Amino acid sequence: MAASLDFTTFSNVIDGKTSSTLGKGPQNVNPSTLAVNPDLPLSTQEDANRAVEAARKAQASWVKVPWRERAEAIRNFAHAIEVNAEGFAKLITMEIGKPVSCLPDHRAPAKPNTNTNKPSQCGQNTKYLQA
Image (cartoon, rainbow, N blue to C red; front, side, top):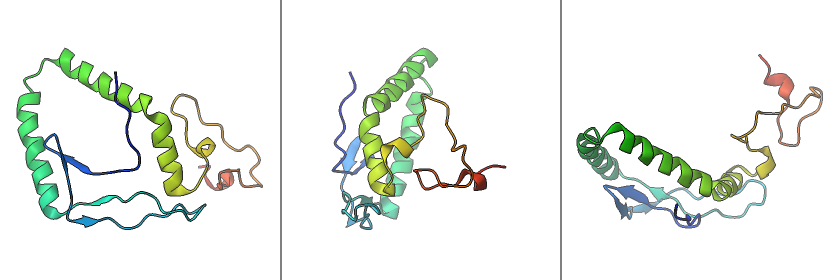
């Protein structure tokens, strides 16, 4: 069973452990409501170096895992994303200020605005998006 995520507190995960960062990231504001979004970590060069080193170490053991087990791990990861899809959608709308209905639905084909003279409810004029 996939764990439910907290979409109000963010931190880096390096080498399987949450990592506090030295500073806060830039303040992010919902452009639609002007509400302040949760703080994001500001990674340092040292954080990035530790993450790369941890990934290199993990790759050495990951390559030895049978492909069926790796496939299962990836399926479990995908399932966890699906379980938390609503939270991810809300977070994205807080960042961009558009309603959830304007986000692409990965489960259904995109439905373009057929009226090319008027912007869609999502603020795009598809006339300019056509090749």
